[in-house]
Length: 284
Image (cartoon, rainbow, N blue to C red; front, side, top):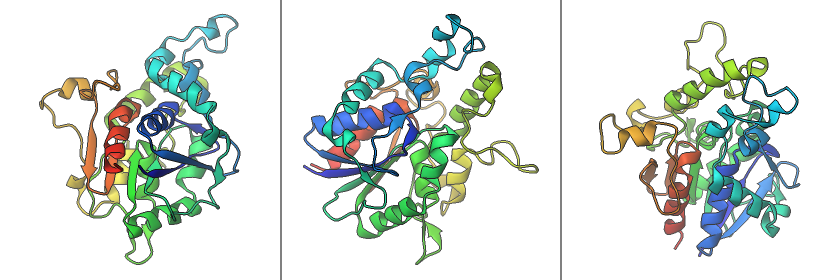
């Protein structure tokens, strides 16, 4: 059995990507060590837990407690249940700090995601975490990244080569098709916070989607074709790319995971059971 280090931001991480991964790994006998910036227990993006805050009427009394768009985008029953259980766990309640985190005795580094800028930018842009990720790749520690966690890896540049640690690897990440659809939807329904679903937005002169996760990750790769997505028309393509169907502990059909040896990646919360299972099997 292995020990998995999971750095997360102090707030706004995705509940499914962290909690379902935790549940899969610990259920299979692996040890999980959490690390937050402050060393205090983290908190997920509350909107992704409750679904409240994504509808036009969200600020209204009574009606604001009734989500509609939020029901589509929030963590599903499995994700919310895993999050509740994780919050009560000893390992989650007693994290180490990012600065204390090291790789001695660590078998895998798991980089989860989230999209809300207020909490995620400090995580994705952390020099401490960049150095940790570079060290993991250099040591041959298994690295697993999902959604915006892949962006953290993409921004981790090895000073010995001047390239991202993902240079030469095959990867997936949150696709622009998924990110753009959720952004266009929530910028209308959450009109007072139009960029809620975009961690980074384009500057004047940059084309649409230039600062999307997929675009930035692709720019870090040796070859643009090393960014992998579900092939249009392939078996299960519609289910895998709908943004509606999520995998479960017993059904991996909606998921898309790229296994590149000691590096594993996935796109979004709907891939998490399969993503964590792939990682778990590598640790056996």
